[in-house]
Image (cartoon, rainbow, N blue to C red; front, side, top):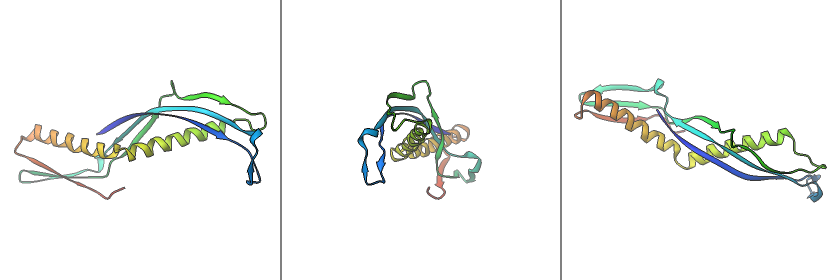
Amino acid sequence: MGVSQDYCIVDKYPDVETFFDLFDLPWTANSVWYRYAGTLKAGVNMDTAEMWPEGTVIHVTLDQPYIISNTPNMDISGVLEENNNILNPIHVEDVDEIQRECIRISEENAVEGGLLEEAQIQAESDITTLFKSALGDEYQVTFEWRGAQ
């Protein structure tokens, strides 16, 4: 059970060499405009769910929602503009680091934006609908969520 969210990050990643970390060497500046887009999925692990009846009440205990996957859309992700510098060339490792940073930012923004709370609400709604469809409206479903993340 889960929810998904699309994202698109576009940012400029500049780099400049320094002189013993004392001051920048402006003639070594380079930059990359990079777009990183994809889809995050968040959900609940139903393998660890515990459920038990008590009269007309169904008790459900679940682990906290988590990010299940972060799938990039490589059809639109990539370098938009590159300002290379022979004194400080852009390397593949630099682009790899930009991608890692975009993944971190996308997940951080999703968590701050409430994606995990949305997954929790969706899980409660889906489970409640399942039980009420199978057992009838006279049953009530209560939820307990194991430790916060």
